[in-house]
Length: 152
Image (cartoon, rainbow, N blue to C red; front, side):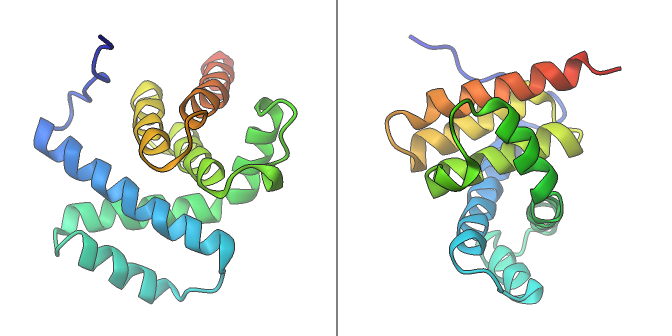
């Protein structure tokens, strides 16, 4: 039986579950931005706010994830391309590509512990990707985290 993902000690269990929901909402918006770019920032914020049911901390968390992932998308894609052996970003399944972008953003640009970011990305890959998505996402993000940790 696999062990559960490590808990981030900064957040109680219930907050971790709701932060997971915030990541799901951000993944939906990243998917939309990939296939139909051009959503107004305020419309995306309203979508997040409605899905987070007015919880300000979660709305802020989701807004920051979305804005940061979109802002750094070119850098993230470049880094992912280094580790997604034989896969061009444009050829990846849309869901996998955006799960990777979200996880990479958390690893590279936030204070979320790398292992937590990977585990949360794996949950998204299992839920929304195909049968091979979790292994693919884990391999790419693990390589990314190892190179980030190796840098001074």
